[in-house]
Structures are given as structure tokens and as C-alpha cells.
Image (cartoon, rainbow, N blue to C red):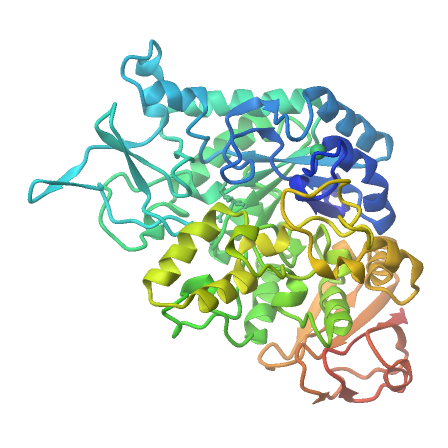
Length: 559
Ligand code: TEU
Ligand code: CA
């Protein structure tokens, strides 16, 4: 049976940077409402809004202080209700970001938990994860040597408690204890609150981290002790059964590093956990393990194109006919896709179009990240103080401690930091890019003078127009439910596939790299007409076998 969320096209909005509605330099709900029509014109019909809740903003709202309140930065509950109403009026849906794994340390639950004299301490203490210090040679030590996702130790000492609390993200984001039934009950209440307001679904943040290994063994960084442990599925099933299933919601779970072994458990049609999954299988296919100065995701290396293709192919295969895939290039935790997998200088336009063409004719539910449709690039900041992300500052210190120079550390931030994808939306070429009347909370990219929505709406050949065409084509031909055959998964440069849609077939051929390429057509191209392309039309039309830098073509054949 077909579900409504199989036919949606999602647009992810990073609220803080999308549109300032009241002139304080911060994106907000009224601003978003005023831009719903842009999203609709693009061809998307569902908005995933990053956390809008009251928060001290240590991690831009992923640190929630009050689940039932809208951050004054973003507006009021009234504004939120208006967003839902305005979206529904346009036949659009609203998905909100829900953080289950942790709260802010300023949340009343944690305030009570950390203070033995608080009247409700008894009830709230075990909402979080406390451990006694380890003592070594008379010195107080952390319970384990784990490192969290922002590059810092996962334990912070609390004097009142004389114990450490666990936080796999920043120290202002204590982890909730999902083994505690009262926590699960409290979070269900939160979910119901927003369902009653009328949201159409949730994107569940960091959903595979809910369970921890309470033996607390030493391990560095130790991710395996707080990621993807079997019990987290039980918590998600409980939520699914009691909350998600009875309401006709769409649930998108974020489960970084999830393997296809878990595909059906998460996103199978019979599963009660998610409807679709965000797993990042194709997102960091260009790391360099030899780089010890700025290691891990920070180490930029050669792009492994087969790895990207195989991830799409593997997930497609795992869920085909049995579950549902989300398709996306990136989100607010990654570099901008054109800078990351394309080229944001000489071949900006070609590579951005190539990336769009190869992604948006794949089956599943697409998620377009704001600014992707105009080819927004990584930030151009020269100074550390232009960055905003909590992670940037711990990691900068780590890089310096590893021995990297200031310049090397800064380059790693410009290449890989999450701030790359969080700069203000580039609506036009004005001083603040049409994002705000005043200096934005985070500097706009200088390239907004030539990369912006206004300009691309006026130009027939723009990237934005390609997005519009692709998304409308997808809808018309029911590509979400199409059948894909990948070609040449081992080939280091091509990205080729055939998509069988409702009434026609699409042949997508691409050179993923800058170096020109000779490529044989993987199937007989007779009957196919060129439909979308990134460069020289004449050459492409002739079905030439030579592909220029980042050249991609999409051919179409009626069946
Ligand atoms: O990110 C989650 C996240 O980064 C990890 O859960 C991920 O699984 C890990 O890197 C393994 O690859 C989400 C949000 O998207 C992010 O912006 C927040 O900072 C974070 O949760 C904390 O709420
Ligand atoms: Ca504002």
C-alpha cells in the first residue's frame, strides 16, 4: 500500500540561517513562513525545520531547554501554529526535528538532577547518566576515556553530585537515560504535545545513540559503547507502537553509521521504528587516514566514487520492495555538496548540476538541503571568530595540539566544518544577501553577489531551474517508485544508472571527476533523447562518448 510520505519532496531548513523576519539578524519562523512559496516553487512540498525550541543555543538548538516552548530567537508558539497552518494551506507538510538523546544542561530536568538539595532531585537524578569518579594515584579521573562527537571527553564532573555525567556531544548536552521508564514517559508527552499542534512528522535526532554500554569500559574514542547498541531499537519500537503508528506521521530517523543489516529493522514496511533513515553511508567518501594533524572526517582525501555509488546501491537493494529510502546529499552537519564532491571554483556550475542530476532520479524520498538548489558553497571565512559551531572550537584546539599550524587548522575548518553548510541563505546580491536587514548572526558568504536565488530565477540555464525541472519530472513520472539499475559500480569516475519510471526510462550518465573521460554507453542508447545536461548540448546530443569535466547527461525514452 502506498503511503503519503513516499510521494513527498522534502526541503530541509536550517532555521537560524534561512530568513530573518524581524530584523535581528537571526532566521526565524515568520521568515520561514514568508519563504514557503520559494520552497513550493522549487517543487518541494514538505519542510524539515531544524530545532525551533527554547535553547541556550550551545549547539544551535539541539540543546533543548524547554521542549514546549519556541525559542524567542525564532518567534512564539503562535508563530509556529501559523507556520503549520500556512504550510497546510499550501498543501505542504511540516516535519520538526526532535532531540531524544539529550537535553540542555539548562533544562529543568537536569537542574533538578544535578542538585541533591532540589525538591525533585529524587525523581530526576536518573533521567541522566551519572558515574562516580575513578581514582588513580589519588587523582580524580573520568569514568572512561571516551571521546564524544565534538572531539571532547564525554564526561563532565559535577561538584554538587561529586559525580560525572555523560554527554556524547557538548558538555552542555547531558545524555538522557533511556533505560529509565520515566524518561521514556516524559519524552512521549513531548511528542504528543507537537502532534496535537499538527506537525506531520519528526526527524529523530541522533536516534541510534539512545542506549549506552553501562559497563563503561575504556575505549578511545569508544563510539561502539554509545552507538547502535541493540536496545536502542527497543526504545524506538516503543515510541513507534505507542506514538508514531497511531498518528499518520512520517518518521525520519537519523542513525549515523547504521549498517544495511539494520535496514529493515529501521525502515522496513513492517518496522515500527522509522519510515526512512538518514545513515550517511555516502557522505564522507573522501577521507585520508594518513592525516594525523586533522584526523577523521577533517582529513580531506581523494573522492572514492565507487564507495558513493555502492552505498546508494546497497541501501537500495536492502530496502527494495521491503522498505523505503530517503535520498540526500548532505545536511547541516556536512560541508556544502558542491564544495565537497564537486568543484566550487572553475567547474562550479557543471559539478553542481552533475550532482543534482545523478541524485534526483533515484527512487525514494528526496531531501534537498537549503541553498543546495542554488549551489551554495563552503564558507570563505579567514578568521576563527567568524565560525560559530561549538564543534569548531574544540577541534581547532585538538588540531593545534596535534601539531598543525593555524593555517592548516583553518583550512580543515573551511573544508570540513559543519559551519560550511550553515551560512545565511543567499536570496539576492544585496549587502546581507536578502537574508536580513542587519548584520547576520553568522557572516554571509561573499559569493552571494553572484550565487543567489534572484539571479538564478532570471536565468534559464541556472542550477535552480535544473532543480525545478528535475523535481517536477520526478513527480510526473513517479520516480520515487521507479526501478534503478546501476552500471559500473567499480568504475572510479562514472556515475551511471537506468531508472524505469511510470511511462518512460531515464538513462543517467555522469563523469564525477574533473578529468575528461571516454565512456561507452552501458546500454544501447537508441530511442533515447537528451533531456537534461550540464554542458555542451551539441556534443551530448550526438551521444558522444567523450565527457568533459563533471559532465552529466540525462536521456529519456518513452516506453
Ligand atoms: O547529529 C548526530 C551526529 O552527529 C551523530 O549522531 C552521528 O551519528 C555521528 O557523527 C556518527 O557518524 C545530530 C545533529 O544533526 C547535529 O547537528 C547535532 O549537533 C547532534 O545530533 C546533537 O544533537
Ligand atoms: Ca529574526
